[in-house]
Image (cartoon, rainbow, N blue to C red):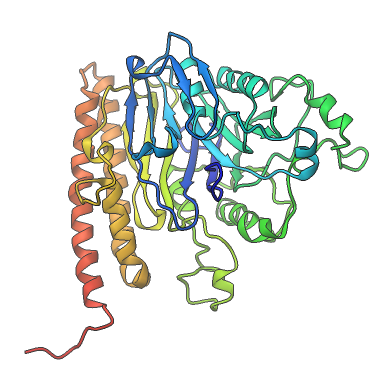
Length: 472
């Protein structure tokens, strides 16, 4: 979220290594701006010499001296840094990935016991403070936890940190407390702007981590709401059950789980939708892209669909929303060389109208088409090209959806093909220029995106309200 403004709203999916199609850990999240606001983004590499040694926030008075041994990492910061860095998502030299943050809910009992800290850290800061300094996901959780304990936070957030072996999901609790749960290897997690964890075990550090005071904190402040013998459900203790949740949050978890577990019947307004599920089959990158583009297809809630009416189609907040800034799918592949373990798939803009593009992350630069975003609207920027396509195509979505589907399938196939090509080259002992491979990927995507824009513009122009079928 952005402090002192309306909250940002994101959607997260995490896929354990035994639930994914190739044994990867997969962390993915849409970064969605506030209603009425659009935030241009860029994909960059932060080299050690560019990492600050003394860090100062823009949105709070927080500042800290940072270690003198940062490592290189990727990030997707704001292109216009008026609110700070907002690095959001990246992979470092050690192939540790981080996605921050998912704005989550809390309640007045928690805030009365441990108020938020105006001078603390927030989404603006976390990637910069953690990712350059950790070698494993667990190290990342513990480093962020220590900072939260000492300095506090001014907002409630969920953060995913992963390596090739495991994924951890950390949720902040009030101003200084936190808990983290290891994602089961054979499951996926859905988290739509709620405090989502529905199970926590104190004294089991292999699967659960928290600040040293948390167990005493929940007891002292009577936060345990479970019936006797039911275990501890942090969603009851630290989360919310509001009318807004039933329209803004829970339906998104329902939509993802409806796709990945079609055999399970749930209510989109339920507060009991599980935090994690075992999918009915392995989960692919295309599945992740699809669910993060979801707008309740084949239901009465689809704003583009024929099945509902003007009331049902506006009942729930879609996952694929107009104000998505960027979406990063952070894939850490097993049994690969260090140079190709981490793949960062990047999308800009509204997810139903874009594609996901893979980049190798052990590089010093990123292609200009993905890194050159400024405040100027131009088709030379992948961010702005996607924004233009979405704005043109939305009024006649059904007319354009075939072209959009073809573009997405073709471009993502190119991405897989390039990854496969590099894997084969390395296996054969060949030298690979990863920056050149990323540039070639970018060039392909730019050409395809320009062609899509040309087609969408022509069709949208022919569908204008003032068109007339007769002509000389």
